[in-house]
Amino acid sequence: MTSFALKIIALITMFCDHFGDAFLGHFSIFNLIGRFAFPIFAFQISEGYIHTKNLKKYLYRLAVFTIIAQIPFYLFCQKFFNTTTLSINVFLTLFIGLTGIYFYDYTIKFFKRKSESIQNEKLLLFIPYLNKFIGIVIVILLASMSEALNTDYGFWGVIVVFMFYAFKGKKLLTTVAFFILCIIKYLSPFIQSNFNILYILLALFTFLPIIFINAYNGKQGPKIKYLLYIFYPLHLLALYLI
Image (tube, rainbow, N blue to C red; front, side, top):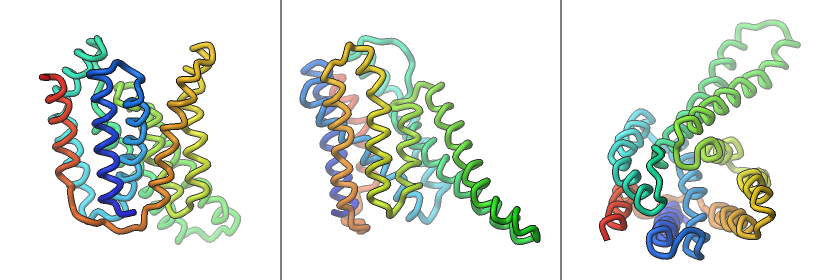
């Protein structure tokens, strides 16, 4: 399965999710299908980091569309979720996730350079664990910032983006880690709702896109880069206006 195919699945399921919010109320079958979208977008961010030729432009693009999408996102949430609480759209979550990957990588490379001048063999054995630990702490801090800013998918979303990068090429580990993250996301509301089966379904449908992600063949397919960015605010605005 190409990157293009994954993106099309993500776009369609995202539209289903928001269509359900607009016309069928929350937690319809359309919202369950919509759980497919974010994990695929998160995976695409991790792949984008690996393949991009210009990380600064990639981050800039996400930042710009965070701003562009915010008003449609706010209007949509205000109308269909009946809330005036300020939350920030998913582009910022993806931006922070991408930033987390960058700082994690930078930390690994920084300590690797420093280790070249260290003579102590015991210390050299310790450094690979230290640099990963520090890198993960930075990612957790950034994820906490995302939660504090009330971004869409918040802390969990940033961790999912990082997880796909951290376990790149390790399908079994990725599957197990993502399964655990899905349980973590829905365990608390499941318990608080007196064990409502709805949250089991939400966890299941959030986990299912791993099937498509694991089928990814590393090929790009047709380029639709800007369609992804433009479609998000446009479809939110269109649903709001209908």
